[in-house]
Every structure is written in C-alpha cells, then in structure tokens.
Image (tube, rainbow, N blue to C red; front, top):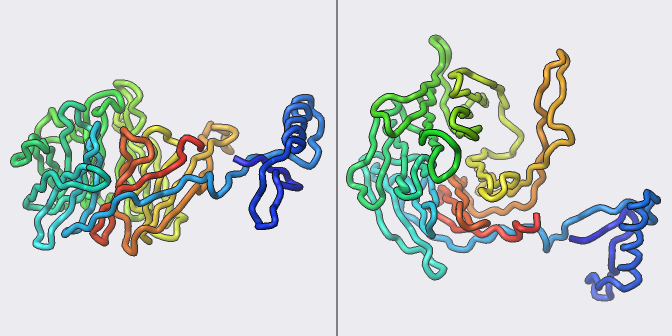
Length: 364
C-alpha cells in the first residue's frame, strides 16, 4: 500500500520516471501528519490521508495449467481435501462424461474417465461427507444421480428428478459446511426447483413450482443459504426472465422475490463463486470469456426504514479488483479450492479446463 495525499504522493519521480524511496524527512513528516494531527484533531497539512493500491499490489489472476478436452465441458468441481478435481460434460456422440484429474508436478494427470448414457450438466459435493466425498450430478434427461467415484458403475442414489434438463445443482449439510440434514437442490428447464434428501428415496422433501396457469420459467441457478442451525435453511433460485426468488424451507413459503431484468453486466454472468476463506471476495465468469474479481463493501448502516416505517436491509457495494480474459468462448463453470486459498479451476466452451492462481489475497 502507498500512503497518498490530495496534494502529492510519497516519494518522488526519478529521472528515469520510477518512484524513488522515501526520505527520512518524508517519513517523519508522515508520522507527524498521521499520528499527531489526526489523533489530536488538528487539520492535516497537505490534505486528507487515504489508502490507494498500486498496480503491483493488486491481486493477479494467473493461468497456471491449461488443458484441452475432447468434449464439451459444462461443470468442474474440486474434490474436497485433495489436489483432484472432476470435469463434467458430453461427448459429440451424445453421451455424458465425468473425468477425474489430479495436479502432479505442475501438470494434470487423468486418473479416471467415466462415460454415461446422458450428457451431464452440473455437479456438487456439497451434501457429501468428507469420508465418502460422493458426487451428485444432474443430467440432460432430468436425472439426479449420486456417484462413488471409486466405484462409479452404478449410482449410490438415483431419481428421475425433473421432466427436462437439470440446469443447476447445489448441496448443503456435507463437508462440514452448514448445519442440518444433507440435502441437494436442483433447478430445471421445466420451471421447478426441488430439494432432495439422499436418505429418502424417490420423492423430494420440497417442491417449488409455478402455480397453475402461471408460465413456467427456465431455472438457471440455485443456491442454499442461511443454514446456521438445525432448523433454518433457505434456497435462492434465479430464472431466465430475471426473477430471483428466496424460498424459506423451514416455513415452506416464499420469503422474498424481485426481478433484475437484464442486470447490469455487459455479458452473461455464467457463474459467481465466493472465496471459501473470505466471503467478501468473489469471482464472476462472463460470457465474453473473462473473469472478474470483486470485493464486497458493507454499507455504513445495515438497515433502514422504508416509507411505511418497516425495517429493510441496505445493500452494500462492490469494487472491481482485477479482471482477465482467458478465452474467446464463455467460461461455463468456476470453482475455488476449499483447501488452498487462491487456487481455482474454470472450464470454457472452447473445450478447455484451466487451473488458476489468484495472488495477494492476504493483502486485501
């Protein structure tokens, strides 16, 4: 970080244009201005002191390993407590595929390839235990399967979850994340959002679907939240028309909804993933083949009263820390390593999977 003022920046420009180091006089001047003036309420000479971040101190997004695949990859997920990850998608012949990779000596080694009858759209380890680490997947035929990757011939759980493709999936209650039962939520093109308990066969424990006569909207994304104890749990779902709905699973009711129309981004946002070690930092994957790294800033006040005197939450703001273009095609999936801060993977529609490193996260 550099200390700067409204009137001048610390150090000076040398003859070669580079900033030279601070002099002793400058340092003591800074100490005086910072400690004495601000502590005793004396106006600071030279203007107000503020923080700025130099280009060299900003986090960098580095493509560490890149690998071309011979199929369309829709999703990728880290295997918890390992240097392994899975990729999921479909071959040109119309079958589905799961590949298991491990990072070894700066390269990727293919450990296992599993071919299935239907293309696989999405997957999650979120409802699995750290001992089993089973992968739950949703496919193009609306099937929800749970696989033991060590013995993947027959799923350990299988259900015809939806009438059409399962676009999105999330899990909770496993991996030591979130309280309560292990559950899986799926969202489909058929307009329904369903919550599944793998311990219960065939029927979902919750089914959120449009009322009779209402148009069915394609559900593009789902996520669990608020699982801070054994009773509380919500599901947030986003739809193709810009609807966002928050379902309260404890009371089986719609808690909140809004419509964001086309949003505010120049291209489609395919994924949003928060850093597991710091939820205020997150990556977004764009339709233009780019990644954007953001920081959430909390508002000065967390709530306020509306025109009718009812308390309502106040949204914070986000600041862009870094962005990079990796592909000419949309980045379809993104996942942070839960074990190694700054390590992540992404896949794109140019049939590439990339291992990325995001640097300087400890300085943010």
